Length: 381
Image (cartoon, rainbow, N blue to C red; front, side, top):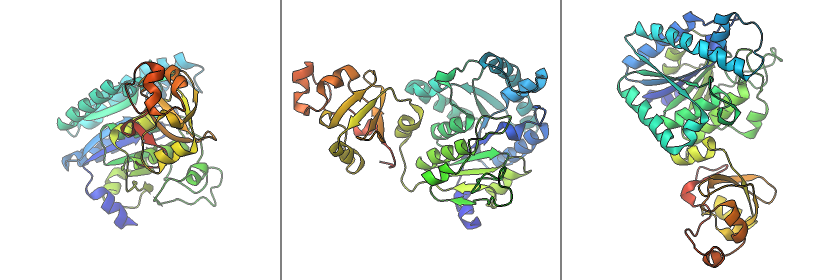
């Protein structure tokens, strides 16, 4: 098993490290400075070896609560945003001091989902990250909790980490949490029979099914969100390790090939960066119900979607919007960027391509969704 791990980490030169609130904060919601220094020590060593590191760090809300002396859960969104506003500066100051001991500078990047949905801003973020890494600066990324509302939230930092791993083209995602890794059942409920799973070759629906949504009291994502993040990045060709973040020297152990946590192997074939962006970053604005012939053409033959295969249009969307393609039973088969609005598709659904101009007065595209702008579910085509 360690041989596979050594093979995974041997060529890694760019890694994203996600650190959860349960790792960074103490029981009274304060920042654990010893943990931050331990991680900075490990990352400082990796940096000396020429490995570029980017952090996705939770802890702003929790550290804000600690500084304000707030006990118990916050009551509403404004309170969470206010706590994040207090806590973010505390968090960054802690990181800055810890990394300064190794002569390293840190940079703060606060993002919302809308920053990644817009393709131009997405590319600007990637360029900024690339420049910071070239300068040997440690980027520290967090959701901009002070302004985020439900429509532009990532959901949790596991999801944010999976997206940023794609943006920076990481060669490994390390998700540091307060458990040893992925278990075959919830170790909090079944401590006597829960067994650690050291290696996952493929994230299946069955694996997702036995993971828990239960989150650490100081965090937002349970093990299910971490496994879903692993599923996303492995589909992009990035291996993922879920490991115990409170263990001293955990990053050094991982890069030494030691069996720590759970290793998720990458898919042998994987999505392009653009298709990953379509599949996992963009939020669908509607649905297209396809007949069996269109589903087979897309999934099995790698074809584009033509209007003749569309049975029903659901939702209101414009040209260029992301739309989900489903089969006759409603199961998702693909997601892509449409060349026609929902209003126009209502007029041309079920028709041959040759009739588009006759019905609409013009025919800018033959395809409703071109294959290059489509991510297919369950495949890497």
